[in-house]
Amino acid sequence: MKNLSIVVPCFNEQETVPLFYAATQKVLQKMPVKAEYWLVDDGSKDNTLQEIKKLHQENPAVHYISFSRNFGKESAIYAGLKAATGDYIVLMDVDLQDPPEFLPKMYRLLQTGKYDAVGCRRVDRTGESKFKSFLSDQFYKVINKISKTEIVPGARDYRMMTRQMVNAVLSMPEYSRFSKGIFSWVGFKTKYLEYHNVERVAGKTDWTTKKLFKYALSGIADFSQAPLDLSVWIGIISFILSIAGLIFVIVRKIITPSSSIFGWASLVSIILLIGGIQLLCLGIIGHYVGRIYLQVKNRPIYIVKEKK
Image (spheres, rainbow, N blue to C red):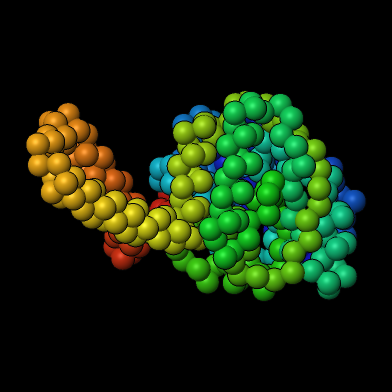
């Protein structure tokens, strides 16, 4: 009998924790595994930790890690994977958007030895806003064009992995983490199961459009140098255009000495354009430098306040 660890990041999920546990336990009872839970409380401000403690008292196989503050889902994922002791480790969301019914099939596929991980990907985003769905689709198109690491469109964090693959993921102690990219970067053979979008069983998501946009930028910065290359090309093009403009002004003055040079409005516009381009390039470079700064400070990815 294999040991299965279930890693579940939680942030303000007091309503979904008991529902998730009941639904998952119902599925696990039909599987030939010895299961343990690692629920990671990411600095929740509601009664999420209290709900988790109730489950721990009911079932000692339910373990928990509580952070000293909110460090983000990526930190919670890393902490859970690090604490998990199973032969197989499955990463799930607590809101039941990751259907537990897939666990037996994922387990059987891993048992064949043909795969190192079995993940899930959504084929649609029914129930979400069209704008958010559009941004998500564009993100996958962009990052797969500018990155050597392929990110599977619609892929969830929901996946079951072998111990070997999890150890490979843990060998990357990056401060700024983008798990979807890390799972792809470490390699290993992955099988994806497709399913239609499932809405949250309760509560409201904390993933606003703004947070998702920042998360997307983080993924691009972690797995592509294309923005830096873009800033270089912007500089080259600006330089060529400025030289061409200077030659045009000189030639025009030689051919028609009486012609007037462009006025102050044109000059100010050009200055603002060049200044904007410079600030854009500095911003791109600064974004990468900032990530380097956070990494070299060697701060912990998370701080544990309580663990059982």
